[in-house]
Length: 242
Length: 295
Ligand SMILES: Nc1ncnc2c1ncn2[C@@H]1O[C@H](COP(=O)(O)OP(=O)(O)OP(=O)(O)O)[C@@H](O)[C@H]1O
Ligand SMILES: [Mg+2]
Image (cartoon, rainbow over all chains, first blue to last red; front, side):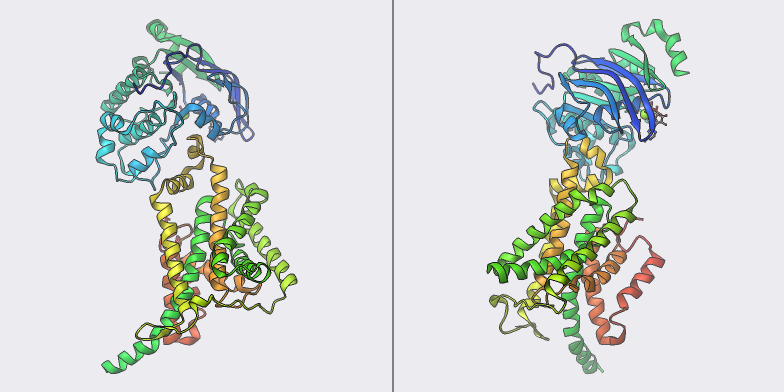
């Protein structure tokens, strides 16, 4: 079975404590603490500018200075370079999708190096995302927004990274596509991958996640189990201003 | 009438073919500049000096160590490329976060220093470097003209090198990393690729191409400290015309402008030294990103 997660792993896969981060002089994260257990889908909710993207970028080492602790599979990564963090087993799907215009679809798909056994093989990926096979030779950015999003996720499923960071994969997509992405995230979870998902749309988040963290002004201010979501709607409305 | 025309063509052909030899150097040098600019966003003004170093290293290998031309063709680019690694690690890498202009100023300064050192050591009169025995002797008869074997070799070697470089960049996995990192280096790094090391090696490869051109040039031009700066001004015009950073564009423009220069030498010899700059001015006005550049 091509599952990403070794069955013996228990406890916390990713433990973030008091993470602070800067872009140059501007201090954007002021103490973020998050725990993710293997096999979970956890979302990061919050308004525009709350610091969700910055949290993912800080995990990857892509912000400026960072402080605090990020322990992945028992290893402290806060001093590691982005390439070392990527190779350690964290796959990153950025907010703007990061599809390369000068690479065709297959080159985009094959770009991230394999970091570990257990990634999806190409036949499986093509079965999950038939469009990527049909359009294999088109330039990556000639795909539709939804297809580009699929490609951005598919390419990190290939690498075997057990933890995937997905930044607003549903942003700007039509409702049907959003549903497909929801189904895909559930499928990923079933295959044993762990997902940290940034979302603005908590109705969507509710359909895929086990737990939710809420961010405001660069801090995690609340955490809600998905099973308690219904009872917490007023609170969430207040945070998210919807 | 027709005879007249054929006579014209026959007269023109040698100049055009010799233009192709110059074009070979333009193509190799602007290719190296394009490779470096694409990845580092630095306009490598030291390129001419590194070309000159390539020729000098070949001369030193031959005269000090007895290593002949064919060995120098491989060793000199490696040696000068290693020098490029040191430059990139110690100096150029500190400037990536700043404006292009700083990289340009730094490499310009380096070019002056390198040239100065070579002028002080070797004088400015130029040292002879003979072509290898296998490429001397009777010229090749192309039907319409006789071309010295060595010049034919230069055109072929430059062409093959350009095509090989293009294939590596367009068709290999390493090339995919390079193209992707040109677009979004942090993301490629987050995928687990050691981008800083890749940048260093790309600079070394670009510098190595300059040195290779230098070795090819050594038997044609005398090996002298100014040989790079003579060439590089024209090469920068070629780069501007082709479009900064376009690999294929730099190759096509390099060979093409060599031909145009040769043709001008036939039609209107007085303009042959300036025709490339006239074209540059026109291209800058009509298509500022260059013929092959993305606006
Ligand atoms: N490159 C940057 N330089 C300086 N400040 C930045 C940079 N990127 C983001 N910020 C600031 O950091 C804060 C958090 O931004 P971030 O992008 O993490 O928010 P977000 O929660 O992802 O928002 P959105 O829902 O709009 O994507 C904002 O105030 C933003 O202006
Ligand atoms: Mg964001």
